Image (tube, rainbow, N blue to C red; front, top):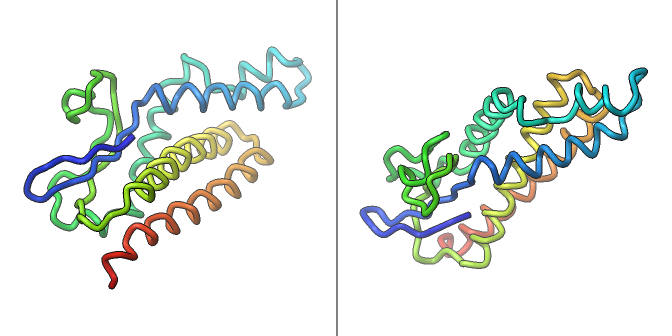
Length: 174
């Protein structure tokens, strides 16, 4: 999600509720676990390979890695913004409506930014976070073929994110 914040400097906040990342990642890993063949059957595969509520701790670590990595792509846009990155703060601390935990960052708001492109950047960041968490999960659970798929998807989201960030800055180049 994104919101504009007036101040010195004006900022755009990209923020993501942790549960809004956890739920689709958990669901996707559960679906994939059902397709993984194990000697113990589907129940064992789900227990071993799906991200469930009791895996919140590793999920949080993987999300932390993902938000730092995503921030790395926008850090040039944070030049005049103090404390641009926030990780696992309450929504109220991050100036958003719900009190649930959020991760995200601020970028400097340039008046020329296209609102439509900002929406695309927002979507690309969120998808990057989800796929990055899944990649880390599969790497750590030893499901190499799924990790390879996630690595390819992650590269695709990096490309989309970089393209949308470039599109965002085009008006500033003229």
